[in-house]
Length: 191
Image (cartoon, rainbow, N blue to C red):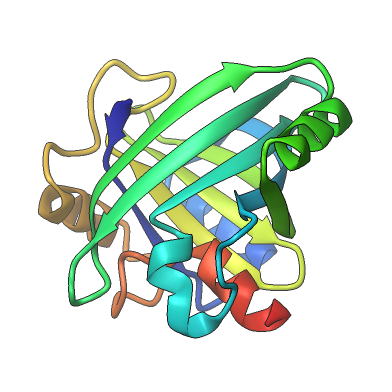
C-alpha cells in the first residue's frame, strides 16, 4: 500500500468565488476534471453513522476520472480519537469498465454505500498545488496532498506543515477541521 498525507477543509464560500479568489492570489488552473466515485463496503458491514469509523477504515472505490481513466481503489485509513486521519494508504488498479467492476465487486461480497460526483480543479501557483472541489449535493471543499502532482516539491513533510502552507493563502475556509471527509458528509445525507 502507498502511504499518503492529505488535508481537506470546507470552503466558506461557493466554488466560483473560491476559484476567483485563488486566481487573484496568483494561482492558475492546472487541471480541470470530474470524478465519479462509487463507494463499496463488505456486504456484512453495518451501515450507520455510529459505525462510520469501521466503514471508512477499509473500503473500495470504483473511480472514474471522466474522459481520462478508471480504476479500483482500496483505501485504508487510521483515525485517532479526535477524528484526525493519522495514516492513510491506498492501492490502485486500472480497469476498463466501471459497470463490470461493480458487478465483480458485488460477486465477491461488496455492496454499494453511495456515489459521489465532484468537479475538481487543480490550482497551482508554481510553489503549491491545491484542489478545489465542488461536490454534488454536499458543498465546496479544499484539499491539499503532501506530494504535488506536477511540481517537484512537496506541500510539507507533516500535516502541521501542510496546514501552515494552506493558511498562508488566507482562503475563506473553515480551519476548525483539517480532516473533513466528503464521504462522511455524504453518509450523513444518505442514512
